[in-house]
Image (cartoon, each protein chain N blue to C red):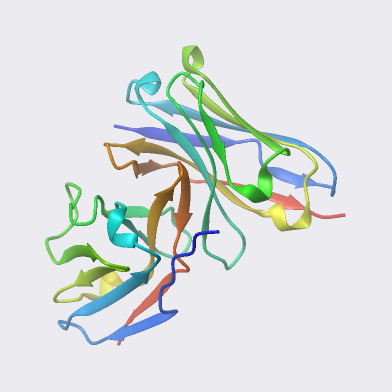
Length: 106
Length: 119
């Protein structure tokens, strides 16, 4: 079965850049979405279609996808960005989520 | 404003059944694919099933095939998940979500309903 692998954790200082990778076979051939989930809350999409940002999502969130790796970048990270982040892609009309990354803002 | 409200969760014994519902409002329900996503306690997200606008196409993750059935009633703006032969590993919060755009991203989520499978 298809797997999407993310680092379990990423630490970043306030104001610095956090990068979260998502690896999967030929992932660049698929569209990737990214979801933010804070404790006790439902997920929220922060990036879709590799690079698109929904309305209301701050410009500091950006995405890329090429080859076998998609990347979510948070520029000028703020304390409010501390959360779990999941990448997601579709494989034969079945959704696959990444393993998830906990972002800690130190 | 898009609003999704799940219901029907609860405690059930292994081998039992449960039917989850998701009431949609604030948008034309029949225009969208819909999906169920679950999250086991302390674990990550897992897509369970999704259904086409008219219900004619349905897809399932391997672990629930033959046990779970996704359905929808567009006249009632509702999505359902019939869960049979439940196992301990099905214990999770179940979310319904709307699939948007050509890339099928999940742009709106409900608050989730907890399903606990235990004797």
